[in-house]
Amino acid sequence: MLTHLHVKNLALIREAEIDFTEGLNILTGETGAGKSIVIGSVSLALGGKVSREMVRPGADFGLAELVFLVTRKKQRERLLALGITPEDDQIIISRKISDGRSINKINGETVTLGQLKEAASLLIDVHGQHEHQSLLQKKKHLEILDEFAKDELGPVAERLKQAYQDFRELERELKEASLDEESRLRELSLLEFETGEIEKAELTPGEDEELERRYQRMTNARKLLETAGAAYALTGYEEEAGAGTSIGRALRELQSVQLLDEELASLVSQLSDVDGLLNDFNREMSDYLSSLEFDEEECAGTEERLNLLNYLKSRYGRTTEEILAYGRKQQERLDALQNYDIYLERMKQRLDKAEKELQKLCAQATEIRKRYAKILCEKIKGHLIDLNFLNVEFEMSFEETADYTAEGKDLAEFLISTNPGEPLRPLAKIASGGELSRIMLAIKTVLADKDDIDTVIFDEIDVGISGRTAQKVSEKMMLIGRTRQVICITHLAQIAAMADSHFRIEKKVENGETRTQIRRLDETESVQELARILGGAEITDAVEKNAEEMRGLAQKKKLGQ
Image 1: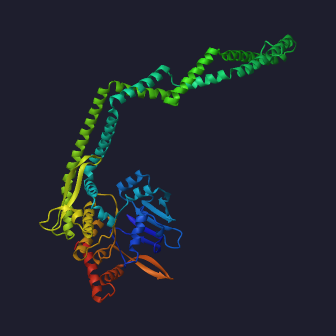
Image 2: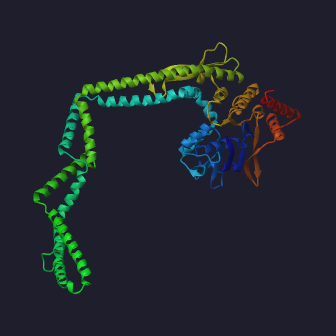
Image 3: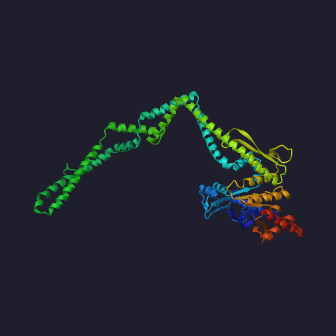
């Protein structure tokens, strides 16, 4: 439910706030007072188009902010699925406009326009003249029917959508597979060459890394031999100046006199350990030097193998693992082309199976739709009669599409007849703007309990209607208001009289500046506003009495009296 609207620096509004309530919220005001600005501000906050002219002249920025109370479980779950968590059951959507650009936020976090629109679609339904006109499009009719039938149709529609995607993917694969003989032979030749080249190389995983290490040692062997050889000589026992020779001589000297002084024993032991460690080091160094001895043939072989691996990498993958994976994939394709007729037959069998499943689901969807279409049209017809379409007939026709779609093979269209004896015809053929608005209101009334959106806004719902029809429209809006929050801008007293909360939008001039203000009316002020709507420029006692009576009758209607 929309609990709060905050507008700042938009058009004629310097700053305004509205606290909406449950039920039917009505906004009225004189022509030019700025009623459209309020709906425009809401639409802006919900992701509507931004223009520089929207910001009030002289202001640096414009702001539209909406606060929603989220209490429905499904609504909350869908928001969480978008990564949006209500805080204290609230969602705050805001858009700040500056230099024709906007900053979009949900609960204080900046989001993209697409994210904002997706979240808003779960919270509020803005119904204006554009949506009236959408009834002239056949596609909208099927959407309305699917929404009405969603409890039973939904699971089938999901499976149908997946089956359609699977069918199209197999269709694409078969088309690509259906090569002419020349193309098949050309591809066979390439596949045989590539798989043969990879197979002949007899690669092993990780081989390239090991070869790189060996090759580096080979290319650096001369420097390593010189340096390691020098270290071996300096620490060895072969040279007179070697550390091993010197330590050995020192050890023998101390051993010759250690019996003369028992304190020498520990020193002799330590030096003996050093001699042993150096001996071990010298042996390992000798082994290392031996490992650096490569013959020319081994060096050439390693270099040749590396060149082969680098060539294969340039064609088939960055590592030996990727090259082997590519080879396996090409081998599968080669096997398929070598057994081409069998391969094509299997592909066709898979496609036939997928099409049969798709046909079955399309038929299920059609059966459900036709069954629910009868129920939906009966319900809409009942509400249309209430809305002063006294001799109306309302049905839905079905045609089959030429090809499959993700929604099935149904083309559905609402048909209407408003006069006895007239044939049923498409809405676009006969419906005026006022009739379209009433038809959409009837549809909204039927769908009121089918969706999880708490708030619906009606703008221009009273186009082209008056008198008894207006009264009927107000009663329908009251009916929707029992299960949903309704916000409506109107210029008709019959609709305004039904308000649970009545707001007046007025234009004032202060210090030479025109401003739009919005305030909630108490009961007395609401009756006065009804009198203004009824009486126009001159409000007589009779007009005031008529307004009081209209308000009283509306209250009784709401109480079911």
